[in-house]
Length: 418
Image (cartoon, rainbow, N blue to C red):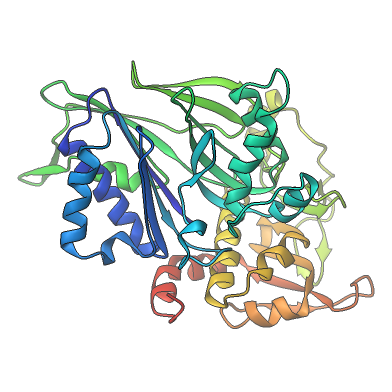
């Protein structure tokens, strides 16, 4: 998926701008379709290519351009396109409306239906563009402020999202995500006491900020202190310039996959309303051995009981990780095949995760989608009498999906699709 980069300081200096550009450059190798950034005075840049592919002169000019257009913060985005041709900058991040400037990492699977439900008309073709336009709609509701609008928009989105946005009238910055995406904040203090706040989709980018020095066999941090914090799913955070703080200001209920909090089999099914729900069971399913058929069914567990439940049944790490990898796999194959409908096809399927056999069963996927997917990853095809016409079922292994995603940057850059 894409990457979001961020830096904030009370008085941003060249070193902090350079650190930000280094993170943006690093993220542009695996997310190489487009690069975008914006500043606190509303200036934005969009490049229809990866930052690392820009000529040195252009990159050098960018640093000086940023210097005269920002005083406190920078928000950046590395794009791996799923919907919307990156050759047209209208489809690249940041997206801007009258009151909103934002970047998004993930895939909004119900963007078309939301666009129709709210009778929205806008020029962008990208799924991400639905977010600022929805926010503008909710801001017109009497008594709705920006926080209430974010909460209501977040609960209407399906798919995966990590969003950082600037509310232009107030100058307030917000961040929110669901459980299908990752993000990390880092507060940095230099030896001279200069404090700054960084954020990135990948924590590795943050570890490279300011760098490390060799002392014999040791790597010594050039910073006086680094402190990390990972935002929670379903929480709206405000990022404040005065104290470089990240503060919880509200909560929402994500309308996406529900995570399993323990080992075993988690079966997801489409409830007919465009969202996913889960049930639990063990036994043989679709020819896949999924464990002890005598193990009792597990009821839904309240959040305050999860710690006790994890001690009994495990922590469900495999399912937690493979959901992200599966989404990455589908979005990458969609890009490689230039088939935007593949993501929508997948969103309509029923997906079952079997940790005990390290397998995923995708039910009722279109046969055309199967033809596209099996060009890139091994799978087993099968059908039942319940399959609607033109669909079938497939079984994939966790290992094959992990191997594909581990190598997807190489596949992407050498596919000829860029």
